Length: 141
Image 1 (cartoon, rainbow, N blue to C red):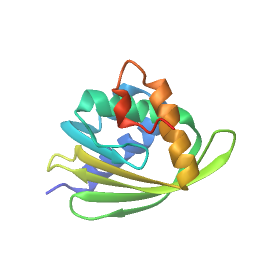
Image 2 (cartoon, rainbow, N blue to C red; image 1 turned 180 degrees about the vertical axis):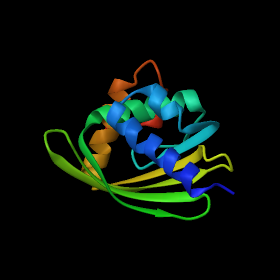
Image 3 (tube, helix red, strand yellow; image 1 turned 135 degrees about the horizontal axis):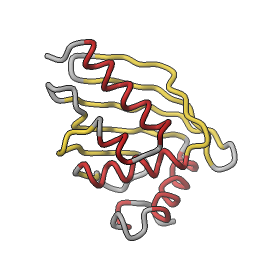
């Protein structure tokens, strides 16, 4: 069972990774076998190297990001957030983080809204990750 201290440290790593916008910051919070599902993705992305690239790139798309609420259960954390991107367009969502017994994140589900901004975000991610992540993970317009 993960202690509250371990959980708090992992959540600090997650929120700090968005502030740092670096792949290495995200990798510190992830297990090697992490999987990412998101509204901006056509299908899940697996493996730490790919997920950290996507998350670091996504963090750079946000002009502002505020985590507004956090709820914890034994192995899960639910984070609500508000953000701005693309010249101040609002986004909101919830992120679900599932952790292994060591407190490392093994599964991420990120649910963005509204749809128009989600599709634009996916197109932007496709452009920014060309040559790094296969293009069929993203909406192409």
